[in-house]
Image 1 (cartoon, rainbow over the protein chains, first blue to last red):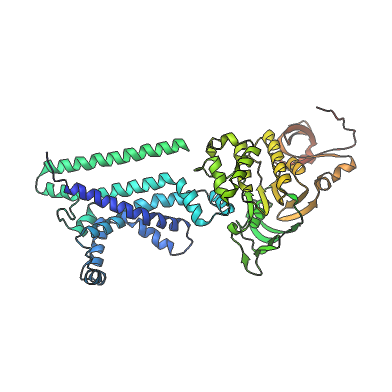
Image 2: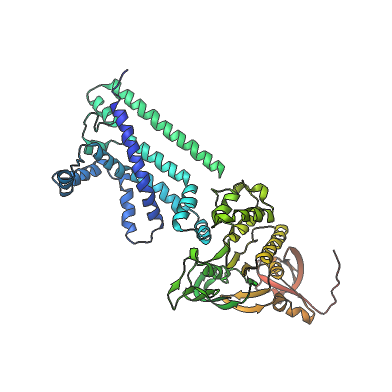
Length: 223
Length: 290
């Protein structure tokens, strides 16, 4: 059975790019949420977790609204910077980053919050700056949480459907990811192809969670 | 010269306590802060270190002002040259014993000092081990020398032996004394163990309810009463049993358990866990070498 590999390739490209971006934005955000004492943190916190309960279509709808060429931001981007967001890979990335944000931020935030304050104090008492403490004491000790954030963000992006459909449309090789290809094939009564795509995603999802579980168990034993 | 004069409102398990202390440590003394838990001992150490802010007051070390509420000075803990040994060691689990020390080392030129200190506390062979594989005593020794690597102006130890058994305590006390004698840095040890205080310190400050109620040499503070020919030991009640008209009170004094008889009147209101003083007078004690 031969299927078009493009949707799978696109799915993994999207997941990879999204995960990398999320790692470099989500970890600082989690750090800020865990340690900041600013009052407006309480607004940001639910916003980060919103994608967990919000229908993906709602998020997609807002992204369309904000980045449509007819909106001020979308118009500005397109006219002056020649950047198109809607119905492009870039749009998918923006949607996925927002949509998978809690999967990266929440486990890392929880790890920061439960990190023993006494170890941080011990590092300060040795004359180490906050930065050095973060990179040499805190982050190395919350590796399991970082790993689970990365894996969950990646896996969640692989499985994304609603936002991708809303923001990306359904353009072959540009925005048609595997989950949308399945939808297309089923609509076209092409169950065989849909079955192959589904099986591939199923196996990958299982493998990711299996490996994550093994890693977590090993870390627990090591501690 | 170290000057500490601080005030802070504390909330302890036994209600609010107003911490208000004012003391100086002139030379390179080894001073113990002695007192029951909740008296504010640890808070004083933390305020000197910069880990807790006083409500108001002054902390000066070697003519350097670390905290002065009137002048608005409050140096960060990183900028105060302290060494702090925490009650629960606080070794970094992601680093080996040696890496813990290397992390603490400011000037890489002093790497030789790591070997020397490891040697001194007999941990050379265990340098490659992670903290979780070390025993309690080894962890505490590692924490001790790690704190020393900062070359502090003041050395602060917060109940450094509280989670160790007696034998280890004694050995570690010797090691602390050894290090103190070698480096001669002003040292404050928080403790509620009488033996420890006696052995270690050149001066004791007794803290009760947020205030220093007595201060002086160990002999002056604790042994003063014994000149009147009394035996006096502090302990805590383990058991209260009624027997006819009397109560048999089982008391733990240090590592010893003893039974004392008390009348119903005397023991009214006593309960298990109460701190008591057992006094013996008007007889000649017999002394044995054991």
